[in-house]
Length: 326
Ligand code: GLV
Image (cartoon, rainbow, N blue to C red; front, side, top):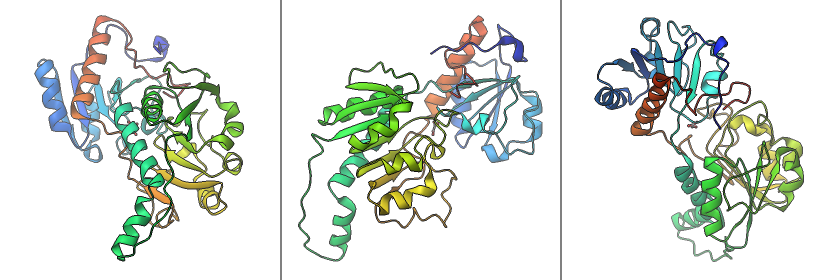
């Protein structure tokens, strides 16, 4: 898990002690207050990320935020970026200079995303949307409700998030298989784990396909039209990144019955454009990238843990391996 960057590529060297920190986040004041309480010697300033200026970046040696502030600026004097999110496509996809150290949040998003996934599984299985529609029309509309227990899930991503989903699903009686880059998982809830090249073979047996992977060179476009065509009525849940799925193929996948439904929290373009057919599709549940939210404490504590490690002269566990993409 620990990835040691090639120090030669970075502008900072160990030990590194940040002095001036700028936070680009809507909750910047609360995050700053927690950091100041723990490290009163640090100079900290912040603003919503859209309002970060070139002067802020010229002032700071360290930046904390989910994604790169508007591209008109370079990163000024910043030598270290701490991402408050798990996925760092908002940095690597925006050409963050290789001389800048990038760390990602150690916050565990798994428990919250597992609840998001369980909510979607029951919403679909219990037909909550169509029951609400019937209720609004005062229609008494009995139907068969199938059990969740006894169904099969294929989880794409077996890290912290995938493991929490696997544990929650297993507790509901769902059989869980995993797919990952390495073909390995540390959580016992996975009945079996395969490498990503097996994905197209495995989707045919899945009732639920749950994506929790970041946007990386391996995952981008992984759930292609060809993979969707192999599905046999699965429900697709995506809490990773929109770019992992061929989004343009989803309406066909739903209308052809390859997919029974889709619950999507992430999209190739966010906010989801009003022209997207996904908004109005009767079997799509859209949520606005809220399945795993960064907390103020998580943002501040993640930064402080990395800063402490850098100050001791040890690369933090959460240094992003740029080739791997996380
Ligand atoms: C949210 O999507 C994150 O990457 O933390």
